[in-house]
Image 1 (cartoon, one colour):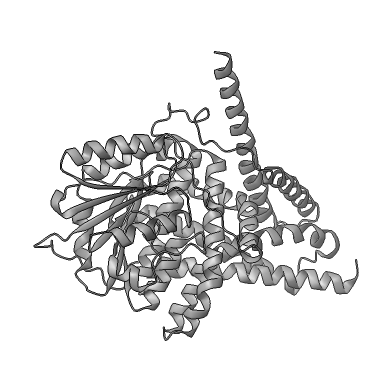
Image 2: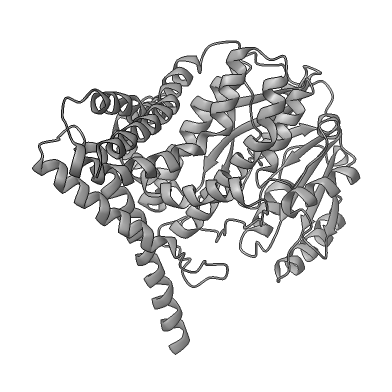
Length: 493
């Protein structure tokens, strides 16, 4: 390998590390800013407004009735509440919902059942059609896996007393955190996103995204923002930015919580993350121009850039791993300036997110957060392990304009004894799993070489790749075997 090629690889490696470090440094910034700004607690409303609750549903056989029962149990005047069941289902879910809608209407509820023959626009299309028919001044949205508490509406609506508030997002809770290590790690990640990232963005007037569910919109803001659009897989982020560019404000309320079911299958989790990754990069392509041409302060534009392109960390991580072995083989110089820069930049990129997640646990669970520190480390392992799957999604967003919405399967899993492997909607093996296992082997080879060369500063990062891809790829194969075993056993009974 020529000297010039080695120099090019070193430069690419360090540029990737520099880019990656920007996101790590921003984690420190958001931790510091999460309690800055105002947190005005509004008084209770004297008169409750007319509210429409939209429930976008597609083939949710196990959780659709559970959701509708939770909405019917909301502590809110029936005459001021309209429920829209936006059902695109093609299986028995639609018959379950139709029966329940009939029962609720007989009990005095105002329930509108909208069933589309085609899924044009997917979730965004269903929401857009429902919005035009919504009678409420405010529109609350819940995905099928959520279980809002009875006072949720009355706790959230008072935050709209500012007439320029276009939407209010509440925090996601979890109903099955302790089901497995995978669900515990997901809960940590979601807690960090809401308690630190969303809170910091809201309090400092950065661009804030509605998270697709467990929030309320002002109908006027939706329509002025151009209504729901389906040209990205992140219709929630897309509308959020368009509405804010129109002058509306979005708020996040950390004190109001809506529990939800976490994905229990690693394939479902990877599918969810891939959809979010592709959708956010699609939004970056669509919205970064209008954001930077707007009159927003420079800091808000920088935060929008880091926010919309956040999933770029995954291809950067893959690039750094792939370059590690050839650079160690032909160009490892412990005191080379570029190598020193790489090591220096990787530290904040690596430790910024764990600090963010640990801070969220300290804020949410001040008496027990110390016990979560070991799990926070494992969350970094999971985040590294899904980087290849998300890298594929990022490149798909950049080079493939088509967007097929694939929902995350839910199985009504709450307790450790619950089983999902033999239920409908389980996903088949994703071929990317074998590439993840290959990268696990690749990281092992690079780590072994680093050990031989006494390049100990590189080892922690390579071990993170090794365990990350090993965990995600191994768990995927193990759960696939569980599905096969359950199906085989059931077929013989």
